[in-house]
Length: 358
Ligand SMILES: [Zn+2]
Picture 1 (cartoon, protein in one colour):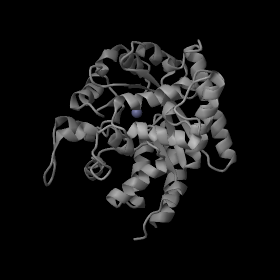
Picture 2: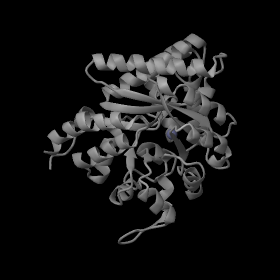
Picture 3: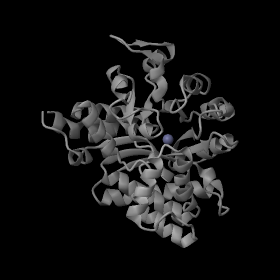
């Protein structure tokens, strides 16, 4: 078998469901925007700043990790900045061969200059639309769906859920909650989830990353999440052996085909997995859970969708068949309408991989 190179992976169509807008800025853009608003950075050299972000995220210190987001969020407080960052995000993903992406952000974190929540969403959605148009012109079309995130330690989830539904016809395709899991169970936001269900809307919940099975159980059985943001700790409900034995919750997640938004590099950085080679993605794929591969925070993890795929190829010896499987899993689990998902699978993804798989 011919080894798959990183350059080859860039060329094939990929689908991404879990990517944070405030975790994917270009270092050079941060430097420019910070100068405009007078925000002090650790360094104003873009290359050194990129390294600083990766090192802070790798340090194992939560304080330093959170400091990285203080810098990105600080330069994301005006419509012009938000629009530019969203536009560049679309272009960067498209250049990496991503044909479908759901990018999420928390509108409540972008109100320091007195914007309204609706103005924040409008700016980001406009930026995605502009970036997608430019990408199509460049011959790398991409479809982007926006997810609105509410912070789980805050008390605005109902407001953000209503905001997401208000913008459902102009680019917002789903809702999410994020932030520290411990001490902030998803059931604190039950009203928001019940509202979304009554509105026939889609949502994912960050659960089972650092924190264990109870947060996964709550996200699914109390809140009704369509997908699990990470969900990597579902392995705690699987007893190793030949064959491995699934507990009730793990069996439910697999039986119901509940998508797991796994983020290999990010999961290693946060300690949810010891290394890429030890990442439960290998086991979960073998057991045919609905596994998807994601980037989480491209800037902090110094990564891209192609790099995450390349790391898995290296660690697990995956070939094009497996990469296609991850990609189709993601597309099947997307929050856009079924006919659009099918079109991307049948007309974009399958023909491209068919050429490689033969
Ligand atoms: Zn995340």
